[in-house]
Length: 64
Image (cartoon, rainbow, N blue to C red; front, top):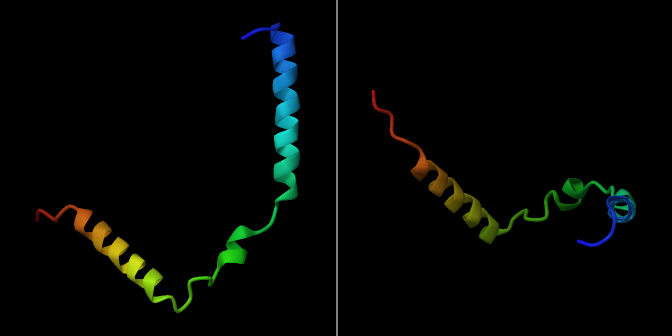
């Protein structure tokens, strides 16, 4: 790592400003855009079912 602390910090601040500018443009509501995109998709329904099956299998049994 070459350069002074001040020059390194200045570079980081410039790069951070670039990243902030890029992300501030993309403030769309991505959840609203994808909501319903898997409606009536049998493959997705199967994925959800298998995921639930796996989660249920990982639950500890009650030891009453």
